[in-house]
Length: 254
Image (tube, rainbow, N blue to C red; front, side, top):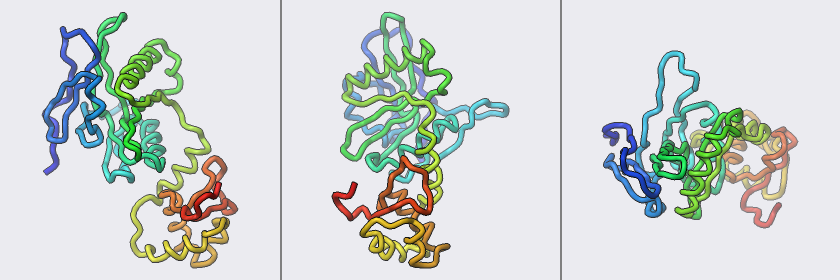
């Protein structure tokens, strides 16, 4: 049975002071800790701090995304947020994601404030990144900048990195969106993996690589290997048949 939260977390009132973090742990127990102590919490294993609204006529586009790197299904609040989930999922330095991970609350010269960050990222080296996804039209609004400043200050206290992002680079997104369709585990064509990696021991174009086998079978496997960084390539350039790929086993290749 899946563990569920009893309710959406709401910050306490009447308790000014240093920033604190409120969250649900993996057993759905509500926790409250000073921000300085939150760095040791494995938020990738915790439950979301709040439910995302969904109702007829909603202006956002909520949904769910299966995260390859940690085999988890996360809810997102908007299509833009889903883009960043996929981009982070594609990043080979990311090993886990969590959405709506906790509630930040604090008091400063502007008064009491609360904020639920969008994404928590655990990197392969065990460092952490907190990401807020904003409509690009709102990034320069004073209240948004103030939120970013507050969150960045708390992250600095915890030894985390922080980013507030808008629309991703269109070329990178086009590539990652395409490859994301091939991220799921292979079944019948799994036997093509080793032969294709061997053929890509030196840089080869996608067209030439798939021509060594039935292209209709080999091409999806090539894209799968590119998503999982077993075949490397330049993601800043358009993905075409003449795109060069090479096996990740080729150490020292730029």
